[in-house]
Image (cartoon, rainbow, N blue to C red; front, side):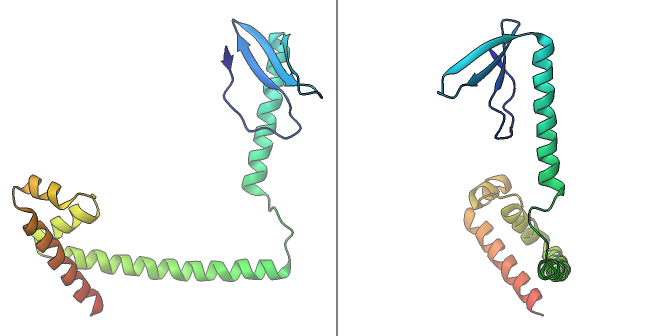
Length: 156
């Protein structure tokens, strides 16, 4: 029994398509919720399949491109002012990111590498210690000192 991939369907689409032993079927429940399985020709199966794909395409386009609520002057203004704030926030965020990146790159090489491994590669103190053949406390101390140095540079 080979069902087609599960598709999102409109609520008014009660059937399911099925291919079984090279035969084509449509499954549906009647008004008394009794499941029916009817054999159909390949041409009819392909027509049903095409209708389903068209429905899916229309639903996806609706979801992506069409407003789902009535626009008012107030909602348009609110959306436009939020966009301005978002741009402002993005600029600030990028500036903070650049400052942080610069502070990390100004660390001594050992601190910088250990901070990067810990925060960006998500390695534990133990993993870094094993990788560098040093004890765990050395790793922790280097990362703590690195964070302290970064904090000082960000405060300046």
